Image (tube, rainbow, N blue to C red):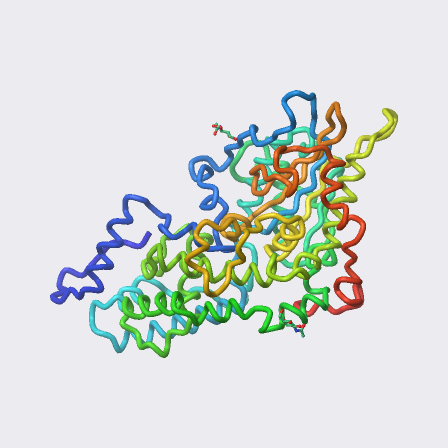
Length: 472
Ligand SMILES: *[C@@H]1O[C@H](CO)[C@@H](O)[C@H](O)[C@H]1NC(C)=O
Ligand SMILES: *[C@@H]1O[C@H](CO)[C@@H](O)[C@H](O)[C@H]1NC(C)=O
């Protein structure tokens, strides 16, 4: 927290700094966490989305495992798809932050003494550099270690230390630095006894493979890249909302608070200020002065703006978004098939776990392919006011360290499958009465995908394996 210090010799307290003081002081009762921390979309901390973890980051509620009480069952396999942890902004966002910082600096030198702009200028120093480009931060390593520990408490027989040491668990990751660091941290978490920092176990031998075909399928699907990612028409709802009346209201209020000139503050810079609040929280656990520029209403509008983007660019908005994840879908079900098929007693038990680390852009298409988080009314630029109860909220679905876990149970009536999204039970569409339906019933629900969902066909003959990875 920054110190509450107003110069004693200040004669003219402007309305802006009075407001500042009031907002700041009222926040003292809730130390450290900005009131808007649950609206940061993919930049939300996991524990702000699931606040029981704020009390105890290792708290695990085993009642989330729900095979039928009438049957004897034991978990025999899990496949987990996990997003990397908290990270620095990407270079693109750092450049925006630089522009915003410049705007504040020049504005403050021209503005009246005691203005909000000057407060901001005196309380915050630009410290981001472009070379930080999206790398995992310390907190991000903690995110993954803590998640690993919680999951190992939930599944002691699958994610056991012994299974890690004997290399019975497969670890795959996207090639991005933040994901490789995350998969390492996850392995550390499985090997650590108790909480806290690394113990006497300094020589963790990591064992993971990089696989961008699985974890960054979106780069390789031409139908997706051309039809959606680089297609302004496909994303027009986002553009419309960005320049629509709700966003204009947020921009106007921010401008008034800062006494800035209208034309300088673009919607991109408004968003940069909002994200700054999120970064300072997720990287440094700071309640940044930037947070005071937004009230709840503003934060909800900005959250909606980024949800619109995720919806149209990565999720249900276009069928190809989900279909681009077909390779990952098939990979997962091949794992599950192996664990879920009947075995002779002489056969080796299946691989206990498979851990796949990727991006929000990996999880969202997969979840939409599975038919999850699909509201009746699609979010558009014009229906913000109808969307308050939507289930499609990136803040809840894909915060840092978000995870989707498929659990195969061996049960008396046959294998069963349960899905957990962020350690919370989620039911398969069409099987709405059971948390852990029979595996064959899940296969029946997804039959059309299991028999189809052909990446080459859906993505129009992209050159998988030969295509250059445009982001690397
Ligand atoms: C665990 O979760 C169940 C619901 O799934 C809830 O009823 C119970 O109170 C929780 N227990 C704890 C200790 O939080
Ligand atoms: C761009 O998106 C629009 C709307 O989804 C679609 O009709 C059009 O075919 C797309 N253009 C390309 C080049 O794929």
